[in-house]
Length: 486
Image 1 (cartoon, rainbow, N blue to C red):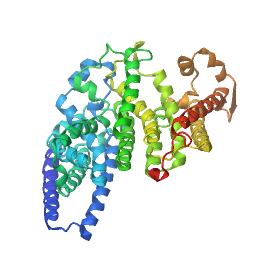
Image 2 (image 1 turned 60 degrees about the vertical axis):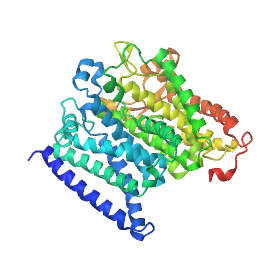
Image 3 (image 1 turned 30 degrees about the horizontal axis):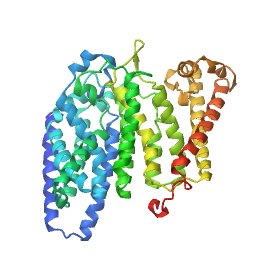
Image 4 (image 1 turned 180 degrees about the vertical axis):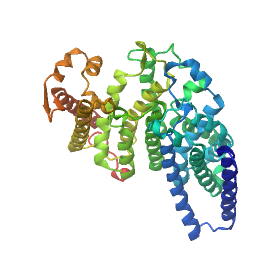
């Protein structure tokens, strides 16, 4: 029996048993019984397990997510609009399910019940299509070719795919059945609120390969590089989008604000890391140590712990890092020309830095944390210094290993302070001499004046931005009730 046939038999048998168990339990349990309380906790645990497994899954080989390196013909051969829509719903489930389970927001319950659960079931029926992409010769293998036979094995991928969808369908169905009252549209206005919530849920965790696969083009006539119309439009989109989210959520409950911020942070984590399966093996340079690349981790920790100190650090240093990236627009080029805006790596660049910039600003503008005090600047400087020293140590060691081992796998340019050519390309020849003033120790490991220069320049910029944020979010300017942030 093939892996495909085994999947359909085992998966739908388990699904039938799971649905039967959930439905029987729903009708015989009391609302506040101990068993119900246990099942509620189990549903939360299953939703978290679903997110964790989904994160593992984005590192698996997948021909549908391949970059195709501006090869339109090859991309079109592998294009499937219906499948692109399925993937869009798959990623939306990652962003929606845990929040629907935990907070039981009526609009997220509606999105889950009316759209995500049915589309997840359709995805399971179409597993044969997924398996073709998982085993495609164009699928990249981030963990190296030696693992390709195992990571593309039909039984392994069927097991992972089945586990993911059983968790999603079981947890989602349980949540919907216990909240059927929230599926109703009490008045017409609720439907018109549901629609933007639904499209927002689809958009917030959109796969970076979706535009090129859905529209069948990289949109080469709209190159995405510094100073292009696409670049300027992107900046305008960030400003307008930020204002829109502020206006929509400024008077919402603290729970709604928290849901927005954490949902954006989780989707940032997924959208950044999803490019690994589009780009081949994970090298040191691709590891998430750049300030913007690691921002999702910082934001999630900040929100889960509700740490004021972390907030003071990420508000400034990650926002400044994002602004620099947005201005420089160091996107993909082919033959000296900026690649089209729909090219998956440009979508990756745009969605990543948009969220890195907006999330901390929304933390402040929506008053999720306490107003800034002037003394809070120490947390910004300490946070950045700890981050800087960490990436400096990693960069010095890894670039030293390139010379010592003659292995380019370790090449990296974290914080743009290790590569003279890249620095002069972005900033100008004026900074070139800073890389020539250096100290080498243990024969292979080098510290340069450029690294010290980067640190002090960034610190000065952070100080300037801290006081800019203080003007807007500071306690002397904004008399915000402390209890709103507790």
